[in-house]
Structures are given as structure tokens and as C-alpha cells.
Image (cartoon, rainbow, N blue to C red):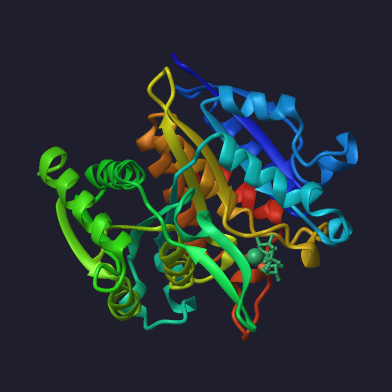
Amino acid sequence: MTTNSLLILPGDGIGPEVMTEVRKVIGWFDGRGMSFDVSEDLVGGCAYDAHGTPLHDDTMAKAQEVDAVLLGAVGGPKYDSLDFSLKPERGLLRLRKEMDLFANLRPAQCFDALADFSSLKKDVVAGLDIMIVRELTSGIYFGEPRGIVTEGNERVGINTQRYTESEIARVARSAFELARRRGNKVCSMEKANVMESGVLWREVVTKIGAEEYPDVALSHMYADAGAMQLCRWPKQFDVIVTDNLFGDLLSDAAAMLTGSLGMLPSASLGLPMANGRPKALYEPVHGSAPDITGQGKANPIACILSFAMALRYSFDAGDEATRLEKAVEKVLADGLRTADLLGPEGGSPVSTGEMGDAIVAAL
Ligand code: ATP
Ligand code: MG
């Protein structure tokens, strides 16, 4: 039996609370045909408290070696006045950068039991299961030149959208590989009508699709039209691949098709390691939620579904991932709701721990 190495970084705020529930889930899978080697360390504000830095070098080194890193959340008001370089978020950014995690996977999946809870009409979102792949390490957030300069008698803010062929190619391959394991469809979004980087993006994605993934159906859309289609009829998509800026916007919009922040997992993947598994970091989309920390109100599902993504994309355990997702679906269908999943009409919420226990029981 292959042992799967996992580094858990619970972090700050509700991070440790939701991670407690994930540990119960890992405990259930461990020994049932799978084996885990779990280590745990500090990131974010708690790492600053212990070591004076939001990510210790030893933790960084460990993250480079394991099959997957699972992170809770970082940050909180206690750290607001820290110097920029010491802020909890810098710990997370350092992980992403040094692990070179260029493909950010954000699923938008609607559990039937929550279809009424979405802001959209039920038939638009019921059964929705799409994946947005956002390029995470290049593009306009990093391109040079950048800055605020003075020209004549006014100031000018400058950012540069810049993509190399290889940067486009590697994220495109991630999207095509994913599509093969899902609905076999990729829609690439850019604005080739007005941006040179978009012209190159479309050219490279088309070439890789034709040469390496002829079995995957590829389409292209301008990102503005894509945003509209995503709201109008999101089920037309399977995998969407797009750049850093458009992906930032489109993935947030797609996420909210499905309901609460407490439900949304994510994965960030890099190049394959020596064992063939990609460098990988999994984390819920939500933050440290200081307003509900320590009250047993946090919804652990986003973090539990992040572990399901780790099962699927790092541990070659697609069936186990599906089993875990089905367990989540079952407890929701049974009517269990943490406070964030109750509408204005209210109801009686279950606690973080009760939700975790119910999911384990459903497994
Ligand atoms: P960050 O800057 O780290 O992204 P944020 O303040 O933007 O943090 P969150 O910390 O995610 O965002 O919190 C936003 C709101 O959503 C808060 O009211 C929080 O209580 C709620 N929230 C976030 N995650 C959860 C969760 N897992 N369960 C319940 N409520 C949550
Ligand atoms: Mg935020």
C-alpha cells in the first residue's frame, strides 16, 4: 500500500476548528485501503507568534517534500498592524510561490439539497459541476514594468499583462488533463480581440489541444462573454481555463452560483515531482473568519471537500474522493445545516463538530 504524505497547516481563526473535522475524515480513510503519513506545522499568525515569521524555513522545506499540503486559513485582526513582510498572508504567498503552483483549481459544484439556497434559479444551478482553472503565477499581477510614475504634470499607474508561451502551455495542459478525468470539454477564455497576450493565449491553447489532446473538445470565448454565459447557463461548461486576472473574477463569480463560502474548496497545483504526483496545496476558499472564531459555528465542508480534492488529484483515490463528496451530499440531503447554510427563515444549526461527525458517520 502506498503511503500518502500530507502536511497539515491549520493556521489561524477557524482554520484549526475546521481542520479538526478533516482529521476525523482522514482517520476514517486511514487503514481502509489507504495509508497516510500526516505531519502538522504552523503557518500565518500562529507561526509569527511562535517563530517571528509567518512561515518557518523548516515548514517550507517540509511542504516541498510531501505529496500534498492541506491548509486551513491564515490571518486575523491581531496581526493587522504587522509589517507587510511579516503578515500572515505572506506565509501563504511564499508557499504558493516557492512551490511554483501555477494552476489554481476552483470547482463550482451545486449540491442538490442547496439548490434553493443559491442566488440563481434552481434549474440553472441544480446539478452544476464545473471547474475553473486559473493561471496563478504570472499575468498582470506580476508583469513588469509596473508602478506609479509621473508623466508631465500627472501620475500614471502601470501594470503589464505578460504571458510566455511556456506559461500558457503548462496551465493549458493542466486543464486538458483535468477535462479527461471529467466531462472532456475545455473552454478557454481571454480577450484576443483586444489583447496581444490573448492572441498568444488562444494560439498556444489551440496548438496544445490539437497536438496533445485531440480527444478533448476545445472551445474559445472572450472573457466578457464568458462571464455572461457563466451566469446565464453555467451547465454548458466543464473545465474553463483562463489567465490570472480573468480567473480571479470568474472563479469568484462561479463560486457564488452555488451558495456559501463555507462550501468551497480549492487546489493549487504545480509541476510533477519525482514520484509523478504534482506539487499541491489544498485549501478552503474562505478566510480565517475572525467574527465566528471559537464559537463552533464554522462550516467544515469547504475544508473537507479540499481534502476530497487531495484524494483525487494527489493520492490517486478518485473513488474515495467521490465517496467523501457523496457523504457530504447525504448529510445535506438529511437536512443538516451549519449556521451559514440557513436562509433568512432560520432553523436550528448544527455545530462544526456535529457536521464533521455526521459526515464521518455517512462515510
Ligand atoms: P480573508 O481576507 O482571509 O479572505 P475575509 O474576511 O475576506 O478573509 P472570510 O474570513 O472568509 O473572509 O469571512 C467572510 C465571511 O464569511 C465572514 O462573515 C465569515 O464568518 C463567513 N465565513 C467564512 N468561512 C466560513 C465558514 N467556513 N463557515 C461559516 N461562515 C464562514
Ligand atoms: Mg477575502
